[in-house]
Amino acid sequence: MDEIFAGISSFLESGKVSELKTPCYLIDEKKLDSNGKILASVISHTDCRILLAQKAFSNYDFYPLLENYISGTEASGLFEARLGKEEMPGKEVHVFCAAYRDDEFDELLTYADHIVFNSINQLARYGKYAKQKGKSIGLRINPECSTQQEHAIYDPCAKGSRLGVTRSVWDKEMTDDIFELLDGLHFHTLCEQDSDDLETTFKAVEEKFGDVLQWMKWLNMGGGHHITKSDYDVERLEKILIHAKKKWGVQVYLEPGEAVALNAGYLVTRVLDIVENNGVKIAILDSSAACHMPDVIEMPYTPPLLGADKGDSKPYRYRLGGPTCLSGDVIGDYTFDRELKTGDVLVFGDMAIYTTCKNNTFNGMPLPDIYRLKDGTVAERLTGFGYGDFKHRLGS
Ligand SMILES: *Cc1c(COP(=O)(O)O)cnc(C)c1O
Image (cartoon, rainbow, N blue to C red):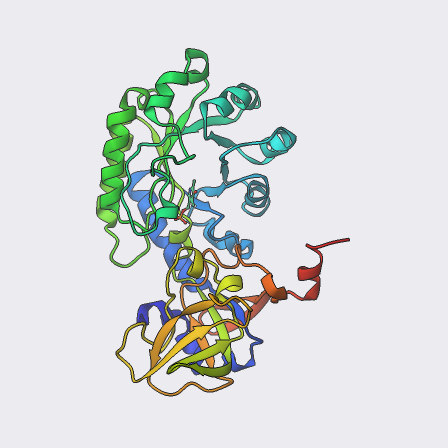
């Protein structure tokens, strides 16, 4: 808990937080830098390459910092590919999309250098053309090896998953002509997992796809590696990466999102009101789970909150909820050392990932401004939002 808020403690002590219009996100530059250093050390120990999966974090003001440590960006489609190309120029741009479309493909090729297809149909449809344009071509495989049960919506190996080519489909559909196009294979099966699960998954990949892997130039092991978490087994990861490179002769890529910006952001919010229902005390905040931290509901999870406990260790218990009309706009139940009151400032941790790039204006909620937290002491406003950001998405 303390570790999660260490980067913002001086700023809070200075009292400057009370000057911020809430809700707002603070992105912790120092924490991004220390995450970057961990990733750079994996790169230097193993000769792998690491890409930022932009769907988790795409606050491009920090790309000049991150590009000191990592090899490029990974995109889920046209816009992220363009952002990566524009904001991390000169670095690699990889793209994976479940299905590409004709009307975007040419433009996509102007940004991306590595194109990963999700099916043999798509590879057959676009692969030759992309190859002629000098692109490196990959196919996402599905090793059918589920290693986590906690977050079923994040399990691409579940039965019936649309993501990646299973070996039986490969055997049915792959032809020599199509195979010849391939430079690399890609798998992405993990979510917030340690390297023991990568080891299990990679064994499954070797068993199912070893005969084809030996012909590849590169292997992308996707994201979901919790590399920058304090208890992550980096040594085991490095062993796997070195083994893969040596045994199969491939350039290994990782494309973590979460690990790049883990614990590198805070959401600062204020208490607007306290209400009570059947003995439950509820604080209504000026930030919404549904709008400003959507993964709290989607994943779901309860985010860390400074000075509060998710368990029962403190005397005053509150449910924290947002100002929207959604009954389920609840962030979670926490206990505190003292009673909450209207106007109190609360600070949620680990709010850099899947937040600023995933929030929304449901209920006409304003989007929180975004600040850079410099040296842990100065908050510099990067961007702000208003009525126009709500309205322009909706009509003429
Ligand atoms: C989501 C995703 C990532 C990043 O996942 P994290 O859990 O944020 O590390 C990387 N690659 C692909 C293909 C993804 O879908």
